[in-house]
Image (cartoon, rainbow, N blue to C red; front, side, top):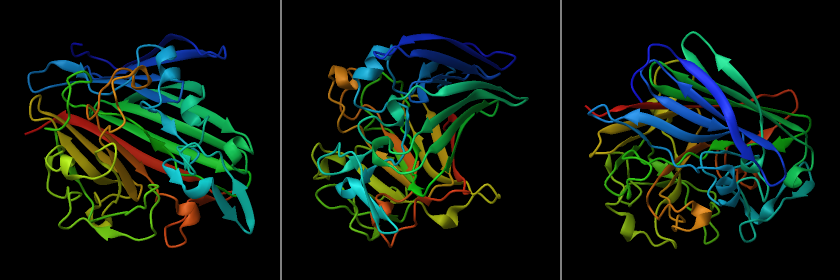
Length: 358
């Protein structure tokens, strides 16, 4: 896509779900020709086209070609995940003496909001057209009892593409009753291009001195551990594949929650700080991720297996960097709480900054 002289946002039909809901695709373009495609199914990022060192544009975000493939997928491609992302131990939590059983969809645990999470819902939408940004505002209401959660939760997800080649995601939520909220964007990235193959040679820096050790069920044990001397040390950029085969999880690869260093603030009042920087040596494409969240889950596409449920994408052909609160905070008293009360505002900001390496 050649550079343009003005920003634009447009929409077009994207088919219908099995339940008969019409799905819409939105295309945002900035003055530099960068483009972002979004769909209201899961409020998902479907495509992000950026240039390489030679100015050639390619899509660097994994997605699906049609709504039927999204409904078949088990990968949460590009979607907003909630009410609570990652895992909740034993699919339950307790608020002021009342136990709330949730849907168990990951063995004994609750994963990414349950069997029908926010990723499988069609959100309301509204175009955003501003002087320096275009985008879409998505809105969803999760009724009390949804997947077992208390309270009526109202959520907005605002995407903005700027002329500075940044895609911002702002997540907000309010509730009618106390409930736990920990949203994330589940974007899959391959900076060589979505169909270019392995991400093992792509280099990654994660701004984290500590991670959350987990038990055999992938539930944190309630402590922080240093990355020093481990395969999880990404404080100096290294190839994703350098230590990957030394990991012992099954399927093999990274699926770890890192605690972002607070002391690396970007020096403004937004609370944003750089959480990760990824670079593809071949294309030169660079992705910097900033967030106001305390943690990031680094996932190296371990469960991608080339089957229809993964839209044909194979293992380790994309990575995710899911900004979020502490995993299983609903059951971990030593972790910062994810409890949201009536009258409070949940506010989650993440910025994806696209460019090319020096």
